[in-house]
Image (cartoon, rainbow, N blue to C red; front, side, top):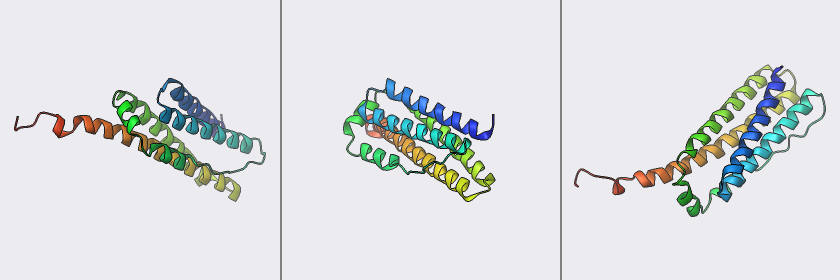
Length: 161
């Protein structure tokens, strides 16, 4: 398996992971975020497949980060619901690790690229994966905020008690 085939498989695994998360999530905000991420990963796999087959491809930027930020606005219901699902934080941290692996792989491929078209492709994919990373980081942050609220000093035992 060459490195492009590895990257294609990695993107398809990412798509499956995000679709699986969307299937098990009852929250509409999270479901939408994971469906957006899955769609992006599928798009990345298609671009890489086209490159592998020496076909033309379009590096059309998506709006993942801005769509996710819009979903995170005004999510009081979301915060209340996720307080009850702290174990999911680990799933999102795994996704963060996978996105970081993608970024690292594409940075390696960028450093090995010999033509401008390949360089543009890997720069594009690096930015896409960084957007995914930022989106997941925001999700983890939101989850941590709900955990912090529950563990805040005003709700815990203090030395004055």
